[in-house]
Length: 259
Image (cartoon, rainbow, N blue to C red):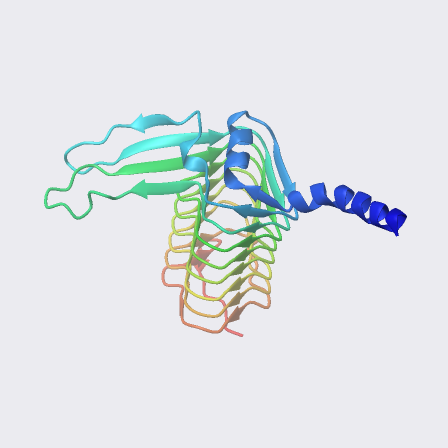
């Protein structure tokens, strides 16, 4: 019996470090990013808000004014980041704003915090329990967001993808905001599910985008969007309302047929 207990204890000691690694505090990830270390996690739950807007290299890039112009700050992630099969229980923030003075009679300048990424970003088969905000972010290298579940809002408004971007197989459970987003190279939304409002109004695609087998369960807004040659809507389903007013494909008026 003593031998058996000893063996079980040794097994537990060996397994314990593995179990401990299943949960990672967001602050630990921020510390690694501040040291410009590559970040790579698999099969972990990230607790707390992963706020990338207050990194050690944050700089003021625009002064605010009494006229209401925002004061802007920029943080930069300078090493590759990769998350696979992870769950984010808090917010994933590459954008936030300080609106504490919004209700004052005399509106003073707002504070806006943004984050850019100079190296590759890979987030695959992950779950975002709360907001994922990348408004105004610039992705200079490849951005992979495949197979993810966005349960709350996904904010990519005004973001710029300078290299390939891939959201294939992802699911957006709430507002998916890609309004004014710019894709400089190829992009993919194949087999993506948009459960609520999908906003691609004024989105700019410089190269072909793939929406094949995507499903829009609610409103799909592509007003003023210009699609280049090579764009695909093969087997795309539109189960809600659509707006393709002023939308063009290769310079011609465009509106795909509903399925």
